[in-house]
Image (cartoon, rainbow, N blue to C red; front, top):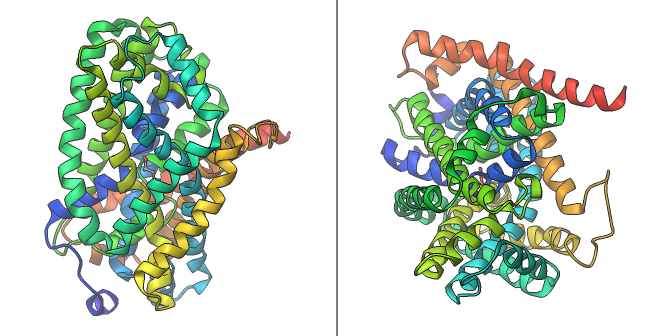
Amino acid sequence: MKTLSQTKSRGWRRSWSFVAATTGATIGLGNLWKFSYLAGENGGAAFIIVYLVCILLVAMPVMIAEIVLGSRGRSNPITTVQDVSLEAGVSTWWQGIGWFGCFAGLLVLSYYSVIAGWSFAYISKLFAGDFDATSAQLAGDQFNAFLAEPQSMLEWQGLFLLIIFLTIAVGIRRGIGLLARLLMPLLFVTLIALAVYSSQVGDFQAAVNFMFTPDFSSLTRQGVLAALGHAFFTLSIGVGAMIAYGAYVPDKRSITSMVSVVVVADTLVSLLAGLAIFPLVFSLNIAPAMGPGLMFVAVPYGFGNMIYGNYYGALFFLMVSLAAITSGVALMEPATSWLSERLRWWRPVAALMVVAIVWLLGLASVFSFNEWKGISIAGMSIFSALDFFTANILLPAGGLLTAIFVGWKMRREVLRDELYVEGRVLFSLWYWVLRYIAAPGVLVVFLSSFLKEWV
Ligand code: PHE
């Protein structure tokens, strides 16, 4: 039963290359910027524990499912699901998973590119010494002044999108492999160094208590939904990205072990980022629940008061920006690969088209911090509404559809054929968790948070 996959390209030859590219796709602003502010807003440890459970029981099995799907179809997410549904003898309407993913990915990228732009801007701000000997108050004021002025935000966002465009135009295998392989080890080292530094100058004990001593009474249903949504966001699933990357999975390697390495690395980076940021937050009396600005206030303060901190700080934001690039590419890959494979557009033209759409959509997020500040959707700014809607609803819904398709519609022998390196027990465990825990789990969280709102 190798018919489909035998006819298409076989991707990376080494598991290490695949792991590096996939780690690059998963580690990004989600780990460095979003994890800390979400944990801050939702009471810390209880949120983190629910998040870890969601990673293990829901997001990781779905990630394996997406890669298996990609490996079976060896094409862009839309064509892949279409081919695989034909093979499974079910309706080709399931290709909607691919469409849905492309759409969600572009929506995410529209605001993701804005935050990546902030990070770019902060490289130059720190390097220029703008935060030397700053106070928390000043760092906060500078952040607010930066948000109030759309012009430079637009320029930095544009630069980010230009870099993504150039990377993706040459194809992910060439463009991303090298970057990810250099970047990831460097990111680990920088984060460890920053965590050690901030444990010395900041309130490490308060940070550890906040992150690891749970108080479940502080966790709301919305917090549980946010934890689930973030598990999908951080592992880059629900947007078809892992279906697209699965098309390059190497032969004769264990998909589950490669995914495990990626998940462990991703989780470690988030926890390390928390350990780097929260000691500063607590020693400065910044409110952990201050929202998306948390990293952009606490980190510049930390570096601003350190010898040569402007250089280290610039390096930190450079890492954040590079990590955002490798993730941004993953967000764009499903739509770009579909345009170039299906419509036979030259890849750079397809990439340009996608970037242009994202840039236009991104204007709404940029202006939501200044000119359009007054507009609110369900009590949130346009930016927050986009973030909430994509991460907490679209991504888990996309993941749910994938779990149902792979777990209930594809034949077990076909899945076994893609996961043939795995032992029998491991394979059955994954299959069981995907069918009976991951898919119903998403439904339960959805129902419990939305029924509460509606009833
Ligand atoms: N996982 C990425 C991050 O944490 C974001 C992302 C989401 C990338 C979905 C691709 C697809 O920053």
